Amino acid sequence: MATPLNDDVLIAIMAILVWDSARSTAAAMMLSSRRLYHEGGKLLLSRNVDLRTSSQVSSFIAFCLAEKASRATYVRDLTLATYPLSPALASSLAELVPMFIGIKKLALIRADLLLRGHEALAEAFTSLTSLEDLSLLKGSTSGDLLITLKSSNLRKLTLYETVIPRPLRTGVRTFAGVSTLHITYLWMDILIMDPYIRVFPHVSSLSVTYAAIRERHSNYPSHPAFGALGGARDTQNVRCINQAAQTSGRGWEDLEQLETDLPTAWVLGLSCKVKRLALYIPHDRDLRLLPDVLADVRPEVLELTLAGDEFLKHPVAVAHVLDTLTVTLSLGKQDIDVMKSCVAHVAQCFVPSGVRSFRLRLGNSDEWDGESSREHSPPLEWSEEIDIEGWAQEIRHEMPSLEEVEVEVTRHVRAH
Image (cartoon, rainbow, N blue to C red):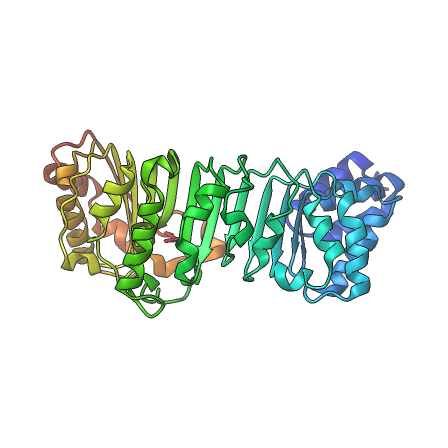
């Protein structure tokens, strides 16, 4: 007869199941013993809890209230995308939330709809003093939660199509601890930077994304800076507003990194120095805005991801001095000659910059998929046709300032 596994082994197995999102199996194992019942609750709440329906919220509340509500203290990462909530369910959740004394990460999707008419629930969320990472996704008034948020531990904030509320724009209250700020926008007014600079004065890592670019299978429609959502006059106005607001040292002092797309970076008009600048170039954009952006933020390290070959039509000369340049060409099923033309063009653009270290990544974005994104084996036909050392020698010839050159062929390149 087989010897039954002891509780320590079963707890280790449960931890693996929770990590692999096999929560129902882990939950079933909790019935095996009193110790597993207790430890299983801790394990299940130690990973992200994602609630999408009212029934899930109800089950979650009941689960947390078990063992004399001690489980609530183990909640660490909660995503809530359930709206609208019934008054009874909102009331029960409002009583539970203050017990999340160890919660570190919270994501509220459509907080404006979720909290509408439920003041007690809104107050409960703002009372969470242990929060380090807050995401507010969509909803014009979702940012209102920030007005009364009590956490002084907040380090990371994600605002997805969410506007900074007017009471915060005067800078009366600041979140000095926030060092990482992610902004996703659809409309140009979200790109007016003065409110962010006032409210989050010590940001060191900033990413700003145009919402449509996040759609994996989209054709990357014309950027709002130059398309239907805003004409050239609108974008010029926002850039001027941003530049004027940062005069006399009123902008951020410096940023460790900025990740965005090229048109957005131009509209931001930042005046602070950025150590690492990562720019995505949509398939229908060229590089003509790049010299302005580099003059704005003066990066040491530049990373470009090019999703198309439109930039070949408009040569630019980049005079800004760079230490390190990484270029990722994610052009889909282009032939090798087009790839070589793109590489030669990029090299010519950056000759004046005196780049010391250059890394080239050649990828095929058409073959990317989520399940195999960890694989990096090159496409067979590319590995046979591309002479990596030969390409590296040509790059050295084009860019005499180079001390280091690396060429990498990777099957899976996700642009942004």
